[in-house]
Image (cartoon, rainbow, N blue to C red; front, side):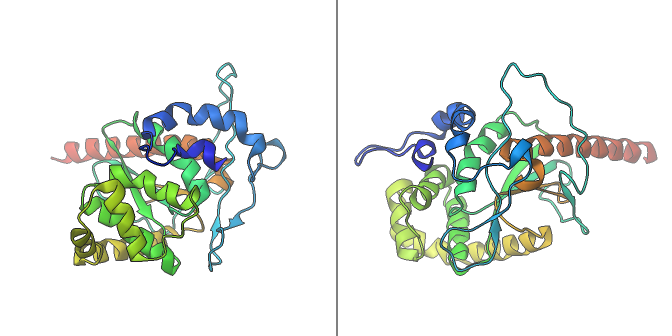
Length: 276
């Protein structure tokens, strides 16, 4: 399963772009779900969480088996309900832009389910409206995960996220590298991001990256994250694979909640305009 989704190449060749994975990810998942290590329970019921592979943490990871509909299958309208398909947070979390609907993907590079989910999210994000913004928050509840969160924000700061994001996923999920040392992460940035080693080290340990990691940790605590991947809509709603019925189910619930928030934002704008 890892190899089929990895885009792994033979030594000396460059890794294929995410575009190839986007185009075939849904088809591959539909064909290969029966071969996956984690499978849904009978009749599409949510699957129990599994321990994060080979880490010294008790945090749980949601399963990645989506419920796939064939193109010819009639659309079934679902009455999405709080507490059944998603969780309403007790205390809303501030978003990056109050004028837009925020969708926040909480992930970990070492999570296989996040690795499978990533191309689906990338494809989904290509069609979102201008009033919606996708952001990502690296999960952090283990010492190694803090290094990986730091790698994510270092890539953003150096503007090489598009070059190293997939490479980090593949290093951990295909090549089975732990990336538990700053030096090994540095080597990856040099190879795939063409980053100067000294510039990497300064950025990796900079005030800006330290601050971003702390803020991400604060957000995930406020979101009450229980595993990865999870999605947060507008700082109010948390969606898990177990509750949504799989990865595609998560994105369907996200779409429902984005529309719900879009209507609420439009109503608020109209009320504000009427008071002027």
